Length: 264
Image 1: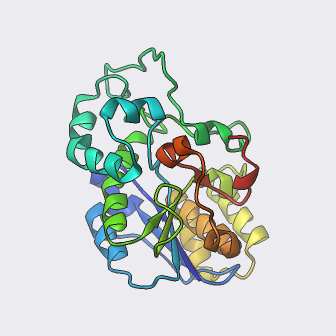
Image 2 (image 1 turned 120 degrees about the vertical axis):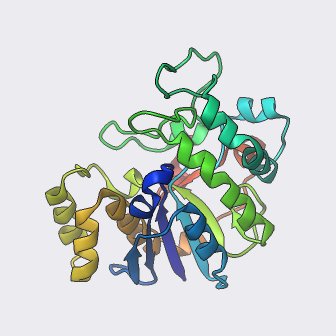
């Protein structure tokens, strides 16, 4: 089985520099680690892959909290992604509550949860945890990349892929939501020396080229380590069960090596 991890950027201006793809098929080494494509190009490239024996992990949120999904009048992941494809750019431009983060748009008070159940359930890493998809601007914002990634999930679903855990228990390839901090651990990712030390310790067989690329860029580092962790757990990724909880089939789950222990 091959795995691909994509470090996905919501910033259209720097997409070719910030979007990194890492592919692995054997533990400890990468087949490739590369950037240079914008969102449309990476989408076209991935959709053209014909191999079914493939798992792709994207590091953006695949969904919203249930209350927001209900407010849109949709009842499934594909319906949500279609709605976002039609309305998402207007949400980003307007930054109206519950969205926030643009200049002059501070976080609004919310009666309903700002996080999904899976965001709350995954382990904290040195106090770091997933952020709210409603933040679409400012440091650490994940909403923009997520909203701009959901139409790609719809396109994969339309071509018969399985987007876990939203769409049954079959379909190839399989797409999972990932959160790189759960792969890298508590390393100081913004420090090139810390990145280099982790790679040397955990992946001594990594090629010099891939080690240098992953050390140079935090985005490349996240993609590389995510793919290296995923390929160590291909048995789990190949046997992901159908989700029995109807709410989680709407909100989704973050995959990580210990996801089955999440107190969700």
